[in-house]
Length: 357
Image 1 (cartoon, rainbow, N blue to C red):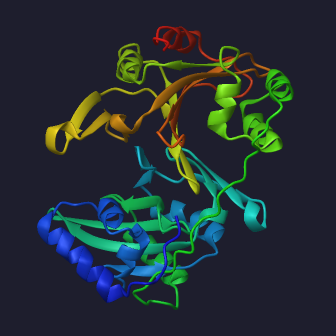
Image 2: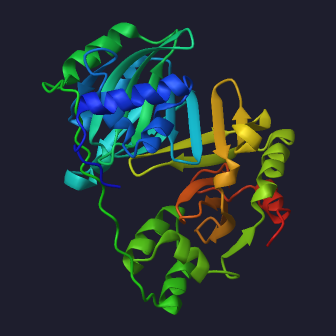
Image 3: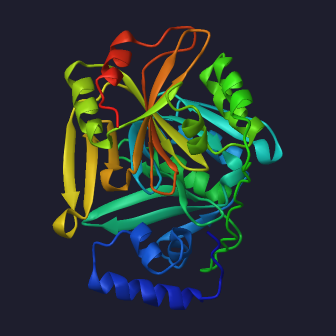
């Protein structure tokens, strides 16, 4: 998506205000879509009032987040939102140039890809009688990468110090969003060679380099491996899968994110609820509603669900992967495991109960 600055900040803000007058509870992400703009462009129109524009270097910014103490970390794509409350305990940044990455470990677990970080804002808003203070990061298309919300226990002085140190000289109300580059995939993939490499995987982390080597889209990879390593299941079985994991206290991993941040849940899940929003159930959300972890999965955006198996030195590792109608990866589910340890038998057994289609 490539947004331009064809509209002035005043024009954007006026159009946004008209939308909010009609629908006061309309979320900024949805408002941006209605206006064919980006969330970052809308938020920038409040610079000088509700928010302050920040600038990198982003690895150094991320390394400062442990100073905030107890916070809520939110990462999302169009169909899935993960929210964790806790601390940024360990931040390890590495690489260079377009290959700068970071791992965050502890109560908040993420994988960060800095090449997609374009702009960030320090935001202070009042919403439904609550004051919300956050750092919000956006990519080159103006889409949200991650948002870090302060909690009652957070260190407000540390927040202010980080804001001061990373405040951008540019505090204008217009935000550039040059857009993102689309990846090139091969139209002709040697299936035998590809599956041979799949046969010889040693670690789940070798899967992405294998996709890059063959220039194959992730969804196409699953199609190439049907009946050998992959098969489709009924997406409606996901609610039952999570409820079964809850009932048996089965620890699982949930991965969800976007081009700039991947957030990971590694624990049990307790409270599973299906909720509907909008008129006539336009939005169906499958939710995990636990004290320190929430997942919100928009079920009517889940087009296909797959079981995916990968050989490793520790045995087969099984995942459940969800895709939207545009074949974008929404989220992944695994049984909780660590390197050097085979996957849990109860997770593998649970996956076998999910109905094939």
